[in-house]
Image (cartoon, rainbow over all chains, first blue to last red):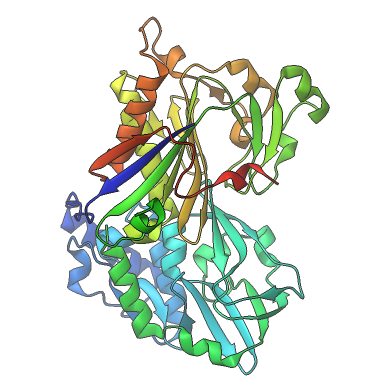
Length: 218
Length: 215
């Protein structure tokens, strides 16, 4: 067996081929107008070529759902979110893990899924491997996987606990993870075993920054 | 300083790659789509082939002699990319490699990840990403026995043929497989912007990823 090792210096930012800014801006405006009558105004810097992805918070779930639709259409038109400065959605009232899972805590129960940033970087999800009910999950460890573009990616548990519910709908409609990552695309619900663990997670501001820094690496 | 420590050094980004040689075998991905194996498993022995279950993405495929089977081991988090971008980079590497031989290949359409020449598949991808680190990878057909593909629905896509570099280059004299491997590895290194490639024939390695063929 031949083995090869790659060495490199810190990756230089590849010079992105600048897209036609007028075309990008007009497509984004067209998408946002067709999506809703809401005055969803996009910052001008969305139209600039940028290696950083902007994350901004959306306070109402309704706007989040419409914006996700827009980002889905954008990705269908091959406007990649990270490269074109299009934003990924980060919701204020959730906690986030570095492996791009979100968690909503409600007393001693928690619901998780993967974030908008994660679903965008994965591509179209065609399969979700769900854990069995009653199984224990541990913070930072894998409990399932998603498959997209011929790649299976592990999903890690943001907190520890026992699985009390799984989203069976994902077996028939795995694409919900892309179209509705924070709502219909939830993956599992657990009974927490250690409420203190949530303190290790990031809030929405920290997570937005984390996404920016990660996307800036290439 | 051993390889593992070096890999964790913040100064240099490392990736690794295994170039495998396979005796004839059919492999399934995590979804275990064994309905795409068109002959009974018991008949495989007669063909001199084995069946393996893996945790990678993708459908059923065949691996055998005269294929370039490359398994990059890269920390995607350290280069800030996700599955989609990674797979697209693997596709690009194979496209560039094919163009070296004048073969006009293209990346797959939606739902048909891989590398195609017209409607004939020349390169397949099936990857696993665990804690941000990749395993499995790609298989590019140099000159495998394409008859093996007749016993499966390759990658779950019916009515599409499988082809090879040999078929697509007609009478062109191809260099040795070592040279072909080196060229493909260089295309990969370039696509991932690595400056430097070190070749090792040493069987022990920084990350031992033998588990993917066990089930």
